[in-house]
Image (cartoon, rainbow, N blue to C red; front, side):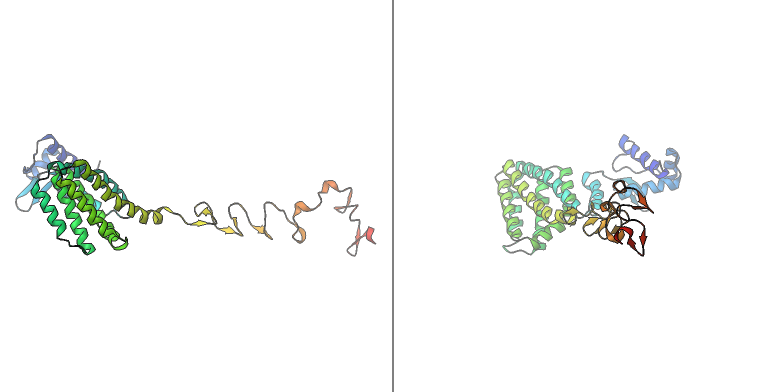
Length: 307
């Protein structure tokens, strides 16, 4: 294990064991390095790494503190990583969202207040009948964020907010390219809201599933053909067939002579395959290597028997 990794693990152990609690100030650098048996440079690197993932908070001139360790704060690091995912991975994030968001919507239906329900209705009404795509997507993100908050589960809410990032571009793309996408989104939002206002968890869950599945289905129809299909040559997948010569795969046929693979035809006179010539075992005694019955000694290029 690298020295910095060892330092990170030791600080983590102090937090997990309770030696350091949320909000506690870490001991002076020299004292903590001596206590953990680390060099001060290794300790500094460990503190920087833990600050990046919101475990520690370095306050210039004041010291280093353990953060609140609340789920939303810790999951910010996951959000940073998630933003780098594109293409087919976005489809995987949508599938995870399809698992989590209907559950959050059902939980929200059990807890939502009349005031929260009205605030959601006001949010949808603010769009108008013909919103711009960017405005619709921003409204969509806020609509689902508020529903997740109504679930009462901060971890679930943070996870869903994190997962929404990679799918934002896909939602804009869908709104710009798919006919009727705006109208369908608005109608599904209204159906979800009606189920929430009626405090019906199962109907709310069903509409949330339909809503996310429609985006997932569209994205799959756009992405998968370009990612999964491999160009074919004469019905043979390109990866299975190399370059061809006259329709014959090169790996199956070596160099050819007059279109006949070399391995099937030996050297031939005048382009005739050797196997089509009369085998030597069928010929009688030979003279000068030629069958006697067909060619005797030749004079001036003509067989004796012909003269």
